[in-house]
Length: 607
Image (cartoon, rainbow, N blue to C red):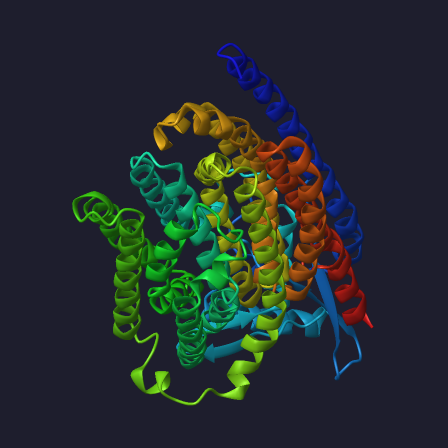
């Protein structure tokens, strides 16, 4: 690659990127139109039943109006119940205003009384006010409230407009994204200091060992994945005992798993590394020393991850942010001390990371005890099958997905390690990963927000409000994916800061461009899979990932042999493209928030 061509490729990639962004946004609009068609039938059926008196209108004045009432109308469902006194059918609109505004119990009492009087005089449907007191909070359900909420959800805009719904998302998204942004920044610091060693094999060894550790760790990450939506639902109901039980059970299982994996990794490091490195690989020695130190932190890292999921489930993302800031700052400070001053080399980077994870573990444990999210007594009880069942059942499906993901990433790592014996391709791949994470971490943060907010919204305000929330978050994903992809292309010159070796810099350039373009797809994939997790559609999510893995491994064998490292990243495009197909199918066909499933629910309740 000569000096004149990189700029030309840089401009060409921007043109390709822009075209991909336009196509992606057009697809979102078309998908939205499909949803509107499904909604229109339900709207016509329900329009004749939305009747309420003046007192009802006053009682509902606290529900906020949506910001746009255009072509992006969303669905709402209604249920019919039989009045046992006069055999009349009453329509019950199942929805909730996206603003989650509440109605005073006193207003509802007056509202119900006036409607009953009005019904006796005019033979109209009666309204029941049901007061459900749980955990000190009063929840109210009325047909008129649901009717107004359905109108509000129907008029919610698909695209962001900084309304109440966007403010709800941003309140949780900003600290969550900031939290996820810290980790790759510190990873970039690790990469920077190890790169300063001037040894490509050091970068290759660290990359291989990190992949093995992360694969083994995330193979059992079903615990936080399952815990977050379950805790979110229990928190929405105000059931503090169930929140405690769920978190404690997850910690107990995590302890058993992590203690086993840590022991095996310390005892047989070469067997684990054999999944990504060939026998006698030049980077094996450095990878071995790095992995053995990281293995010590397997247990504290697992408990810290459960703690992070628990705080996300109760919608308090600022606490994990504070923990991450402190622990990762420690990592960044210890890196140059351990690597150079202590003379530990690549093992020093592993020791710094392990120290930060142990600190994170101690912080989460203390905070969860302090806020009564866990109790010591429950941490030492035998697991309850009633609580283990949802963890294990959902865990089996999530485990299938984790296995597929691990096959994918281990295949990629093995392919990059085998491209050459100098470690240049592997070092370049690790740099491309860092470039990818510049935007990917923001999208991953939004994915965790969707996984926590959607089940909370379903439990608190119903499927219609959750559908509006999911659609809005997908729109944010499309916008931010395009934005961060463009930013990554603009930041390509930072590649030079990761390695002083010219051959590594040149090898990392094209993969970094491909990684930037793929962010357009990733914006939809990450948020869409977060919605699937929040809906607890774990089996569908796993099957989608398995199909994507099969496609990716097939493409990897073809593209890497023909195009080298750029071919590896082309195979990533196949992988995420197939995952996007799974997201679209869930949103539009078989997911609980899809138009088809809401229509089926409407038909079933109308019988």
